[in-house]
Image 1 (cartoon, helix red, strand yellow):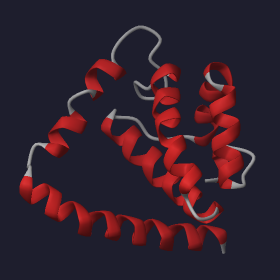
Image 2 (cartoon, helix red, strand yellow; image 1 turned 180 degrees about the horizontal axis):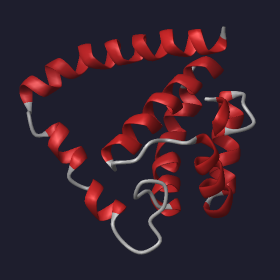
Image 3 (tube, one colour; image 1 turned 90 degrees about the vertical axis):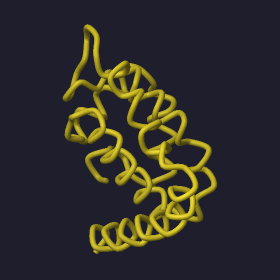
Amino acid sequence: MRLFALVVLSSVTLTACGGSSDDDTTASSSSPEASAAPAPSVTTGAGAESGGVTATALCDYLRGELPALRKAPGEIEVMGRLATGLSGWYDQRGGVPDGSQIDTLTREQCADVRTEALKLAGVQSFLQL
């Protein structure tokens, strides 16, 4: 049931984001390109793990998401935001999100960020997203 709720929430979130970004995209077509451009600098380099994702880059991404996660009205919304956000973020870097790898990378590099994100989502591990 939780998975179904997450799928529904993800669909609603993507639809809502798509509706509001149509106006933004019409005004400026460079927005998607701007967010895709930094990906190579983050994914290249020694120590790249999990499809070119480094622990530092992953932690920076999650750290940047915390303010929005704190404002989310409930755990289901946080779970949906984390699941869709991580999926898109990994996709931009040519990787596939794997909960156990995310857990390992974040435990090593940013345990405080990991703990807060998981607590907000009401889960013990990224495997549960």
